[in-house]
Image (cartoon, rainbow, N blue to C red; front, side, top):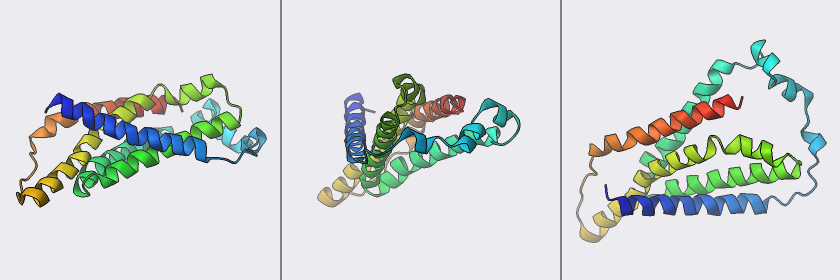
Length: 184
């Protein structure tokens, strides 16, 4: 694979993710959020280490739920993104950025410490986002595929020899899922 094209597609995906992040961060204009509203003793107890050991939260399923969720997103940004000419890939990157922007904005409004906010994102977030951007390069290739089909009337099936290309982002998704799991 041409490294310049790969980096270009990563930057395109990252640009859409950042646009989504800014939309999410700045569109949440509800300044009336009060930290006390979000302090729910049942939730705090359910997420405490004691409650996990007592079985109130099924810790075994959390890791696999994170992995399955990440693989679903990877499938949509790559395969479904390719089939839609990259449109779904772009929409998912924007949506994911919006969600992260809203979460960070609400964490700030709830007066959570910077250390707490960074702890929730820094360890797994960049790895997960980069892995999904990597999968997104496949989805963005759909645009070039359809452009070639419609402009040159040539229908070339995409090469399936890129399966080795997917091993690294799959590994990164597993690593990020494990790091996210450790947050629980």
